[in-house]
Structures are given as C-alpha cells and as structure tokens.
Length: 436
Image (cartoon, rainbow, N blue to C red; front, side, top):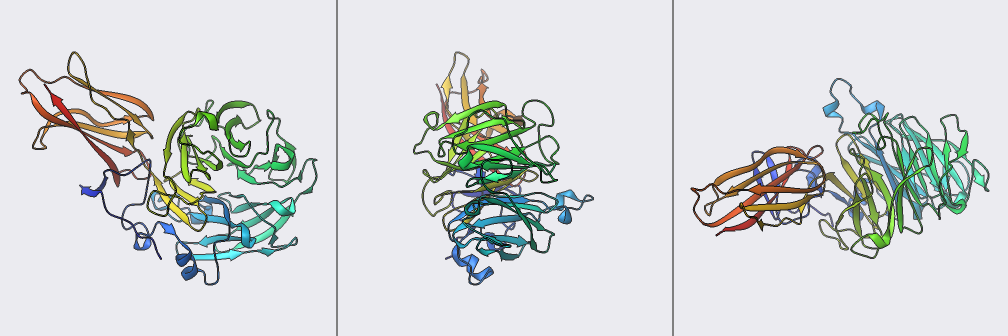
C-alpha cells in the first residue's frame, strides 16, 4: 500500500507550511514537489514502476546532480538528482533516469555486470559510479551517462596489498574523482585516483571500517571552502559503535562512540555529510537517524522504529544532495525521501530578575522568529525577526514593558532551515508564559 503524506499538525502561512507537534530536523517535501506527495518508496510503488523487482536487503545509496542534467544558466532548476541504490540480496543496482524512469542493473556472479552481495555505492557528478562488490572482493566501476548505467570494469581482488580487498563495504567519491574505499576485512581505507592507482591511507588503527563519506572544498555546494572543516573523511567502524572524522590524508580529527550517545541501542550503518559539514548517520539498531555537528558533538536522534511518518525500519544507506538538501534513506523494504529542516528542542521559560529567558537548542542553522503573544494571540513584543542562528544552544530574553499588565502570555517561536526547505516549511512552537 502506498504511503501518502499525512497532513495532521500542519497549517499554512503566506505559502509556508507550518509544522506543529512533529519532529522537523528532517521534513517531508512540501506539497506538490513529488507525484501524489509520496515520500516513501514502498514495495508496491517499486512493483508499479519496475515490474518484477523487489526490495531484497537494500544497502548503500548514493545521489548526485549529473553534469548532463545541470543548467548553469538556471541552477535553481537543478531538480533531477540521479540516485543509485544497492539491492544486495538480488545482486543488482536500482537507479533512476530523470524523474520518472527507474531501472535495474546487474545479476549474481563474478563476471562482467555481475555482483555478489554488493554493499556500498558512490556516484560522481561526471557520471562515474562505484559499487563495493563485497562478495567478490572488488570494486565495480560503472558509468551513468544520464540515460543508462553501463559497466566499465572491476578493479581489485582478494588480498591485502594496494588495490586488493577483503570484503569491502563502503565507497565514496570526492569532488576530484578520488575514490575512498572502506577495506573492511583489512581494517584500512584505500584511495583510488582517477587513473586507478591505489594507495593505503595512513590512519589511526581501524576496526572493520564499514561506511565512509567525504566532503571537500572543491565541491560546487559546500559551506566550508577552507579551514579544518573543508576537507574531511567520515568513517564508521567497531561494528557500528564508532563514528570518526579524519583529514583526507588520514589524520584524526574527532570521534563519537556509542557510549556517548543517548537513546540506545546504537549500531550506526551509513553516514553522509550535509552542506554545513554536519554528519547524519543511520542507526540500524534504533531504527533512527542520528545527527552530529561538524565536531561530532551529538545533536539529535530523529525517528524510531515503525512504518509511519518520521519512523524507520532498519535504516541502512543514506545520501544527501548538498545543493538543495535532499536526503535519501534506504530501509529494509523501502526508501524514504526527506528535505533538510530545522527544529528547536528543549525550549523552556525561565524567570529572571528582569523578566524571562527562553533557552532552546537548534538542531540546524535556521532563520528564527520569536514573538510574545497576548491571550488573544496578538503580538505584544518581537524578540527575534528573521534572525540567522547557527546550530547549537541559544537564549532569547524578554523584559516586559512597565505598562504591560500581568497575566497569561505565550512565546511563539518559529524556525526555518536556511536552505532545502527554506520559504516552504517552518516549525512553530508555542510556550505558555505567566507574567506575575
């Protein structure tokens, strides 16, 4: 059965959809951006679009705006994102051509156009596609020309030398075409340059690296183009209990371990950088997404087990398109599509000697509006107007005017992500305030 957009808890203000009483760190697209507003690709939908195809242990997913679909004169119309997903149990790749055509590629085996338990996938804007062909101890190199996916060659074999692998699980391209490979069984990261030369990255000891992500300063859409956050590698290892960031030459930067994260159990599966260099990881055990800031400080856990909106069923791979913040999450029997959003959590009203303070935590950089309302809902005082605030802890202060009468008031806080869902979706929270 198709899962359609649920409109409960929504309102509209000046063309902007207002969310209330629902999580909004990630949001479903605004009405009209997807056919029939379907944001979960279920088995039924897959069968309709690709007869005979079934989800069979889906794993990695990757996306990119191909150069063949880019219009430099109108970049705002770059809406055709090409995605590749690994259907591991069927030893095949599922991919799209344009907005409506879905196709499949590959079959079981060891030869050309064949895979054995493939896991990770990566795609570059120039059309290069890489698949971690795990069971064959190799990397399959493909090409997407905007119309079809084609086999190029397979590289690697079983072993522990450069260009040799032991059950590789994760792959990721940087903007220059270097391919980073999580060589899981050999406890290392290998890098293949565009000429297909391999080198082993000199990293701190790794324990079964399983997922990998890259962000670099030469990308067309990335916030940090210099400094320590501009060029980084993210790696999940220790059976999904550690996430760490490294420089592109392997030096350690930060790490987060399962014992530091709330809401157990924790088994991180896939990870991806967003435009601002934050990291989002899928948690297979908790059936949730976990977001971390650029220093790997925990931000928020999003979702939980289930088949309803804002829920997941054993999420695996994740991909984020940096330009518009589209997010793809592969699950046990479906794939979900989100936009990057923003939320304000832990909002409280605290009395001070001059009035009130309102601490809260922003889960994403956002434009913030805040007003004090009277009992009739009329604005009394504006505390913030379209204020651009970064992810993290914030406080708003209210000093009531001497002429203001005592009584019941409320704080109306509205947050809107600075990209992706900007001008389309906002989160609104109302908090009672008693002025004595």
